Length: 135
Image (cartoon, rainbow, N blue to C red; front, side, top):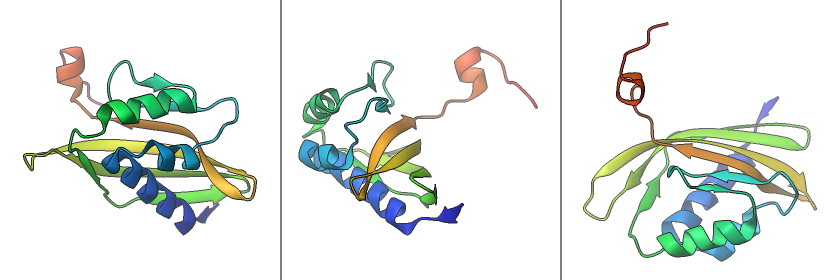
């Protein structure tokens, strides 16, 4: 496995597409292959086709939320690559909400396309389950 700066750059472009509410940019970065899964932070954001991703971005456009990247880590092995990041959503009032992201890319037609993405807003075990779990 090797570090993949091209994948890091693609994650930055995904952040740009989200921040601008740009469905065309997002669609250009997304695979059209079967198996596409895009999981957002809201409970109902489980999308499996580019048309649904487009509608989600259009609905969120204009909300004024931008993505501030953390330290994107990206790697590849053959025709598969992946990235992980801890960034923040910056709201119009300047407040920030930390999030976590993983993304998987597949090499298609000479380029890399997003095939799976999962973004989440972490909550403590105590908040989610009612008790603190220790390891």
